[in-house]
Length: 288
Image (cartoon, rainbow, N blue to C red):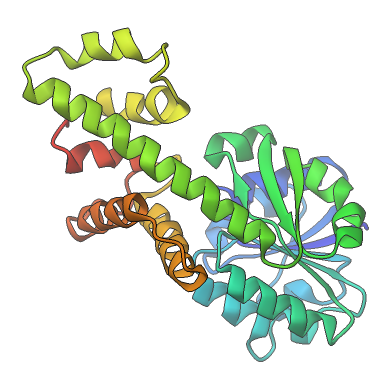
């Protein structure tokens, strides 16, 4: 595998694509906003004018885009990835998307002798920049093994989760766990503020104990400092939670905490906070 088409060069994708270039892969790139790929083009990546062009003649096509509707369009739409990729190519969707859609893409790809895997990531912008992402992979195990050099350029904890859709299901588990943890952290500080405690003193007392977590020290801490710049945007968190909530219903699981946090995130989006980091949940609780 030498030639990679990379589609989606946003906050995460640009850094991930850069690591692939560092590892010696020949990169072609496409993004709806060309300026977001400028740094990669300056380094020698080939710019493509369409998704189909970016997929043509590649050994591997990697995507990390916004929403499931975007994934469906670029993979299954006319002139998209499955129409354009050469037989035998590996198709790697690293978007957090629907496991049901991942299964659909896998089946459509297999009919054309293409190897599709779903490989969503965790670790945020810091993990992308440091090439330390956790990569959760669903699909054929042989394809997972073949893609190891590609994944190793972008992440550290690379886990085969099972058949098509399993990577997306595992990412849903991750986001569900984050939702409850972050909401609990925000509620703790809302309680501290309402009861007349000094929030900073409470943070100092509990952040390094049993209540400590990355959501407290790595996310809420930024918000307490007044920094709401996104490591992960609230609107994308809402998208992830909505996918988790919809598929939980389809699978027969009742997840009331997930539903509650999804409601809170949607309220933040309605208030114009969708582009802020997930630490904006402190605003919902009136802590900041």
